[in-house]
Image 1: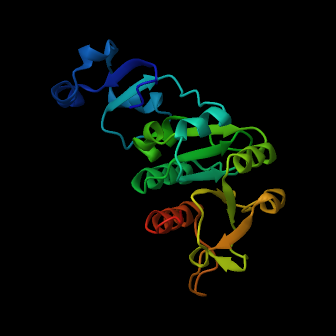
Image 2: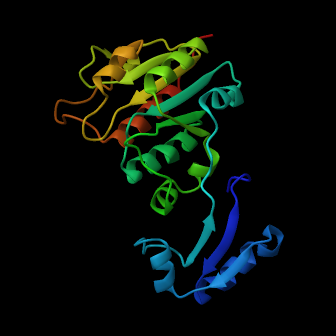
Image 3: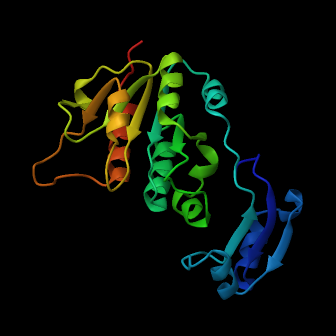
Length: 228
């Protein structure tokens, strides 16, 4: 768990208590422990029933400002994914997991029409929500300008694009933009990209789920050498 995240209480069922205390030294965290029934934990998690009888009440992470986020990366080679108005926590959580699996440097979320950090997102993302640096932005145009000023090239995923991700010799610092699940990338966002790219695939399928598309892009970009 992110060391900067404030932790308040741990809830657990009697069945889960023995395993919890054998694997985690709760006393070292200076945290309140409360035994609850499984039904009570269901209510705390607002309908998430496929849990292991343990949950922790924490403070939401306060993401840094965009400029601080970029500064913290501080790498000559950097890969960022910008999620433009993605509001499905299952997709966003899956993207965070893929980002952790493929060593993506960070994720940018839009503040408007975007998923909120909650228990469902945390469970879907597993530990990735605490390990992948992320920030939130209010204005995507300003964000893209700042990123370009810092040397990033901006690529949008558009299944109608002429070029494929396999056609490009990518520079060292890149940002991939993914549009919403229902509408795809917004026209104004597309116009701000240095180039729009597609994923080549069979004619048997019209489109991919956004989290699947993200995973493919992350796998591909993490397995090629970015040009120096």
